[in-house]
Image (cartoon, rainbow, N blue to C red; front, side):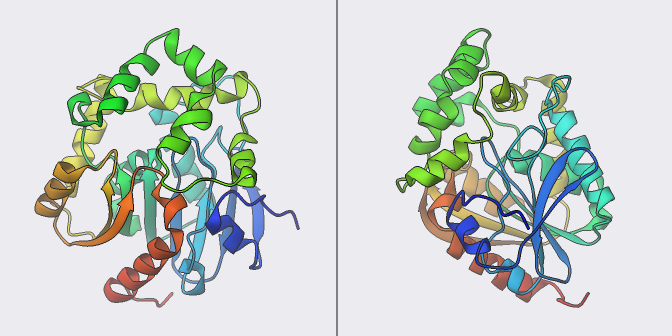
Length: 299
């Protein structure tokens, strides 16, 4: 069977295990290992699907390439909006008939995952998150370099030139927001899905969709809605905290720990944004420990 090229330590891990690779309705690729209750990982930008280490030893670990990312198709007529990604992930879950899901979410995967959990609460057992969008963001709360860069890439034609033409997300930001130095093979794997200006359209659209300072209005409303829900739902939550972080800085971390009920916080040490590249084994171990403590492993 076909195998994914190793993209990261966790993918190197999964290549040593039996692997199934499938394409489902909607031209989405996913990988899965293990048996039992499903644990669905939703990745960020500009990443691809990955299986968290250790999880598949106990549960059914599933990861999907978001539409336009990784090995999923990149339809020319798709806008790659927040609604588009949510629709495709919801369709993916329905196509695989996944029930009682535990979500593992990061970056853009968190906007999709939190929204799905809010809209389908009965189908979600728990949420593990890291470097996530737990509430609407403001530019003033971002690190200085991010605060300067984001308004620029959200403005045409600068965003197009920097992201689609200049490939800044993969050539610069990925490295600046990861503590360890990525190997040449890993860098090549990250770049593989995006060889052309046209293929980077999904990468460029993501920054336009994240609500900052209340805009886009519709997306702000959606994120504000699930943020209010997170403050009242008793659904088990695992917060994997890294410092200094980017989306979740010290102040945001304090708000999360104070505001969200039924939450377990694990201080994972140093990390910026692409934390799954820096310590995937610790992330996997803590997810397994949390699930073992809070959820039944029975099918």
